Structures are given as structure tokens and as C-alpha cells.
Length: 436
Picture 1 (tube, rainbow, N blue to C red):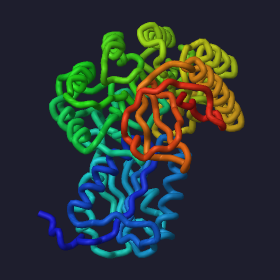
Picture 2 (picture 1 turned 90 degrees about the vertical axis):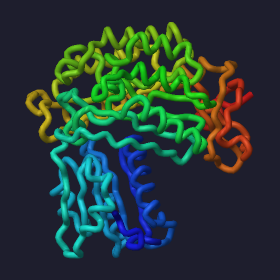
Picture 3 (picture 1 turned 180 degrees about the horizontal axis):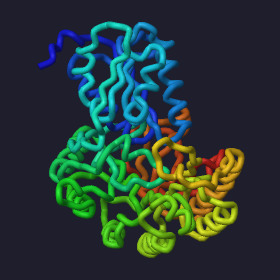
Picture 4 (picture 1 turned 90 degrees about the horizontal axis):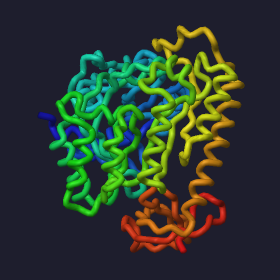
């Protein structure tokens, strides 16, 4: 049993990098600490403890993590610096070598920060605690509210896919989850706290149920029966796990929004095979087609990686042509970076950094074209919009059920409420549609 008096009124600062899953987990850690007497630091105050939850999806992510650690060390020179998350799991010694770091915790250890904090003996040597992640079977649930209105509910962790470019299985371990019953209970807790929209988050959420003998489809159906006025979004789901059955169900659901995020990664079967992805481009095109047939106004976001080993100029052009042919709404473009321990390093053909940047620019431009076209197709249509708290003084924004960003005159009473509106044309900077 932790002695509460040790941490009473101690100031703690948090910094989170990477995915929404990390933010949900930081929120869970924060609740643990505040329950034991910690107080979140305010701007201008000195923290007693700084916790950095890291990402390691690319070299750029690693660099941003190091920058964050150094910045917090400068801002809070007398604080205990604790670093956790994916970067800490993959490269603990590298982090331990950074000046000011006191404690490095692996992906599983971050949920026991209080215990490790009590073990610190005050010496100058950085202490490292990190489990062999592939042996971790425990699922740690978490839910967070972002700085707007939506909540992110962690429903799954880990991945069993081992794609050749990816380190996530080494950073987060095997696929695991809570039961459907436990997950629905967490969703209800968010609803009782005021949630109007909950985003289902995870590393590979379509794999939900693998550790409990259940299925993601059954989770969707269970959440759809919650007796509350709340809407759900699916954060990202592999195309081979997004079954036609799930799409058909969502097309008739009141609570699940017509919004999909599906990782493609590349538009040629040759490179998909090099990546060891579990689908081909024909299956991906089928998923887009069935979504648009059943939900013609659905927003479809797509992840793409450019410049991987083996992606020749010709294959990249073929990939662009395929992506351009899809009726999608937006691309989330990643630039490939070599990751130690991945099988893609065995592929000899490499793409120069300059060419990777050029390809990224090409796809960003294509993404803008797709998003502009999708938004224009929504003019004059009517949708429920959840208004957010962020505003510039005169106007506020919200997102429609099909994820169109909408702007209107600011009205504090509308924050975190759902209002049915008709979509007009673009706002002044063409970043959103305006309410008619």
C-alpha cells in the first residue's frame, strides 16, 4: 500500500508524443498520480516530477522525444525525469544516456510509475525497468478526453503482424484486450463523465478478442446497445479485419459514425508483399467500394508510407495511380525511415532521402485534392455536428457525423452538444465548411 502522504501536493508535468493510444494511457497514469495526491503543474510552476510518454514510429519520432526530454529538463531542472512508452521500450540505454533522466520505464512498467518512483534512491545513475515485452499478456485499459470534446477509449494493445518495416510488436508486444463486458463498462464511465463521442483506439483494433475468445464485430454490436446519446468512431482498422459484415452493420447503426480510417500503406501488390501486409490492393479497393455503396457520404482516411526499400520509381507511380482511383477523403502520409531489427533492412534497393521527401509531397498534394473534392460533395447536405470547445473568439468548430469540419459563430452554450446543421461553402481560409 502506497503512503499517500509521500506525494501530497507534489507537482507533476506530463508530455505525450505519438498516437491517441499514448494520450489515453497518459490520462490513466495521470489519474493514478492525482488519486495519490499529485497535482498537475500549472504554467509557470516548477514540477517535482516530469513524465514523458514517448513514440518511436520513425527516426523523426525518436528525435522529437529527445527534444522533449531536454526541453523539460531545462524548464524543470530540479524535477525527477521519467521517460516511458515505445521509445523507452525499444532503446532504454539510449534514453538513459540523456542528461537529467532519472528513470526509464518500459511499455508495461509505465502503469506502475508510483512504485518505481518510490524506489528511486537519489543517486545519479539512471535506473531502467523494462520487461521482455513479448511475454506481457496483461491488458491495461485506459480512456482519455482530448483538449476538445471527444474521448479515446483503448480497447486493444499490441500486434501480432510483424510487418517488415514496423517496430510496434517489439515496442508493445502481442495482441491483447479486455473483455467486451469490461470494455462496455469503461465506455459507460466515459458517458457518465460527459462523453458525447468516443473513439475506439488500439494498435490493431480489428484483432480485438484474440486474447478473450471474442470478436471486434461483437464489441461493435455491444457498444451500439449502450442506452445513452453517444456516438462512436473507429480510429483505424486493417482492411483484412474490416469485414463486409462490420461495414454493413455500421451502415444501419445510429451510434457508429460513417467514418473509416484504413491503412493501405502502398498501392501495389509487389510492395505490399515486401511489407508482409495481409491483403492485396484488390481487397482494399473492394472495402472502399462497399463503404461508398452503403454509405455514400462516408469519410475514408487512408495511411500511406512512401520511400520504403524496394519501392522503385515505377512502383511508386503505379501506387499513386491506384490511390488516385480510390473514392477516399484524405491521406495520412508517412515517410519511411529505417528501423533497427526490422526485416525490411534485408531489402537491397533503397530510396534516397530527397526522393522520399519528393514522394511525400506528391501524396500530400493528392490528399489535398481528395479532401477538397470530398468537402465540395457535401455542400447543402444536413448532418449532426458535435461542437468543440476550441474557438478563435468569433467562431467555433465541430465535426459532422461523417467527419466534415464545420465552422459557425461561437456560442458557449453549444460546446459539447450535437446540433443538426446544413453545410454551406468554405470558410475564409478554406479549412472548414460553414453552417448555413
